Amino acid sequence: MILISAFAVILIGLFDSYQTRIIASIFIMGLLPLFCDRKYRFISSLIILSFVLVSYPLERNYFDSGRVIEIRDRYYLLSAGFDKVVLYTADELSLDDKVVIKQEVKAINYYDNFNLSTYLDYCRANRIIGSVSKDRIESVESSFSFRRIIYEKCLNGSGSWVLQLLFKNSMEIESDRKFFITQSSLHISFFVSFLKNILALFFYEKKADRIVLILIFFLGLFFNFPYGYVRILTGLFLLCFIADRRKRLAYELLIMAFYKPYFIKSIPFLIPMGIRIINCFLKEKKSVFITLYVMIVQLSFYGQIDLLSIISFSFFKKIFGLVYLAALLVCFLPVSLNLDSALINFFAIIDSMPQISLTGTFNAVLLTIILALAFRYLETLKNKYLAGLFLVLLVNNNLQLFSPVYTVTFLDQTTPNMIQRISEIFERKPLISKEI
Image 1 (cartoon, one colour):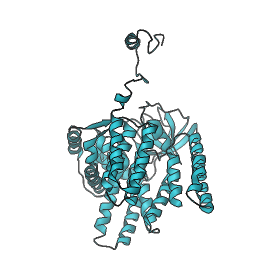
Image 2: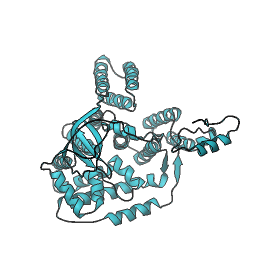
Image 3: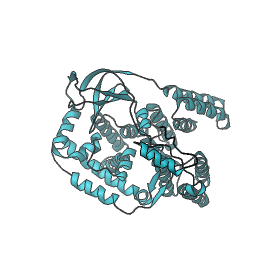
Image 4: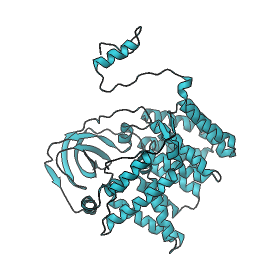
């Protein structure tokens, strides 16, 4: 019952619009009699309605004061409770500084990339309500902070690679492979598994799990509890009380869904939790299904994938997990290790490797077919359904053969000359009016 409720909540959470979530919840509750009796139907309906209620978008147009929780190249991220704003200022601030703004919040400008991953979705999921600009900050309160001490130690000693991994600062070169793995927080998962294996050499399994739980909790305090830390802490905490894997998975899905209702349709949720679900329900051919699942998610979000990158996904996860471990050692021990040049060269090498690309985003028909084939494969483990999933990917990669008609939906920095050239292509019926 709890597993059905969890999957229902996740399905509702994949919708962005609150109105669509209400419609989806009503539809799913109407289907509950097919899966559970009256008692469990009432409990499932209560869970679904509670999730819809906490998903209600509360708007806030004024920001009074907040704490600096992230420092980026051109802006700061301030937090006041659950709400966050992007601050643009010429003043230099540090982590955990409390600043007074008292200003109206402006909507964040963004460019829609027409894929599943957009900056607007990122802001909604992280409760970033807008941006504020202030040339001079009149009131800044700096109090004692371990995070600030660690941040300044890394800032002055070990290069930007530590800051990028632990505090989300940027490096000179960003890699698509690094971005996808760090976004999914699987490098942290690998670090936790590595730590558990080391501790298991000296302690019993349950005691090792509790030690890791305490260590990750304190690391979360230092780094402001990133989403990956919350997910791992939730799993480790439930492991102490629930032995059944599927029941524990259901509660973990529900806790993470209620924690950030609009974060469900995101890489940090879909990749690790999807892999958890596959590992929980499949006994054979896990790696093949996980590879296929990662391909589908990455195509849905970014519109293209590199097959070699997907195949080497597990390898790069381990590499970045070890680099993350090195960053933690540099952070807390009196040592200095500058890996900026080495990592930048490494990223440049792996990004220059030959690519075998698949492109295309999924429409509703293809997604329905994928879900149907996936469920049939989970039920039967027959190769024909797995082959069908790969066939869908090939069809998706060659959709232009079935519909070779394109529509211009967005023009950036359009000039009159550009409009004239586009209009001349369609002499009978101009694509864009010359009066624009």
